[in-house]
Figure (cartoon, rainbow over the protein chains, first blue to last red):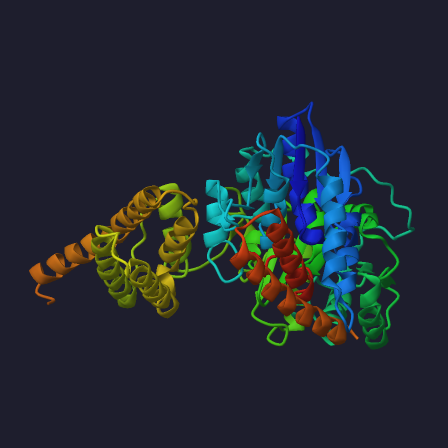
Length: 482
Length: 57
């Protein structure tokens, strides 16, 4: 059996795919597994023994003719053709798309043969997005920074494959530490995958200054990419300390494995070293800044901790230093988000209302109890959605109406607007929108039947709250409140 | 320099999208239009610094 796995996202996503690839190998021990990544991030495949062949998507080469004052799209298409011809030589029995992106969905569909099973995003024959499996539907509707999913991406991958992880799926590759480092050091990753996730040299310096004063015997090893060298240089200008060992720009990504494995703790923002530490099971303090959903991409190390800051500017560097020092002393402060076992990987102190959207998501997808909202606007939005849905269902009984398409589109716009105004209904509306996308091309009658089914299911979902609202109204009336 | 390259890509992207739309109008969705769609999405991801999470939908 030949299996192709696509992971065309970045370093951290590739490392988060390692457990899934190992589980896939366990599931299909005699299969040939090919793994497609971008050449820029191929360092993250080094040491992954579960695959048979590593393939590269030559994105830079394909796009080069377009990055000119006179773009040559024909040449770019010809280069893409060349890549597709090469990868298309193999007829895959299974394609697993772990990328969940538009490009990967087109590529998956292009490579799908008549006997190929597909997991993850692909396309229908008419080019529209195909969320063929339940996990893809969930990913499309509920996963992302601005959404309310709390299942870690690595666990979403496991669900897609239908596997349960074992301890071995999370092991680090065996690599020797070829750099001389002191004992019992702390490793600090000063960079991040995006500018908005990174701390300034000044903030790092303040944090490390506090840490050095509090823990003078703990060596600190700085790591980062070559293009982050200026941050390290800046930090060292501000702190003159023999405790700091600068490895920034001196290591390949995979050389970080033994460095992180031998550390007493890793401190870093949202980036690949956090996920390396998940595999080495090194204690981790993840400084999670801005537009990051830590539930999805936080540390999976047994002793993993998340410190959330809305922005780099709002983060109090000295406080982070203090928190890190306390962790080294075995004390976990209340403002830290801590690791947990179960469906979600972390435990965070929050109110039921803070957790509402996640509880609602679990109710929709897992059959958990529907949560009660304390916000009257939620119930008002539900009633509006129920009205519109009722109107749509009436229109659907007359699907030969020439204006039906226009009416349905307009109704969907209104549903979308309601979800923008009242965010707490978004899990339901996102579910609905993803279900509509899942309808495959086909005969009008079949499309209509699928559409009606979706609206009936939506009606049942909404009625959970309509009936609750009526019950509450009845109870309040009996107690003389209204 | 990076900004200049992004500008070239953005201009090329607009042309590609136009050409693809024309192609789909003249014939149904097929392997050739699929390749063009691939190139369009690959370009968009590059402009977003290969952050496919942003390009997910």
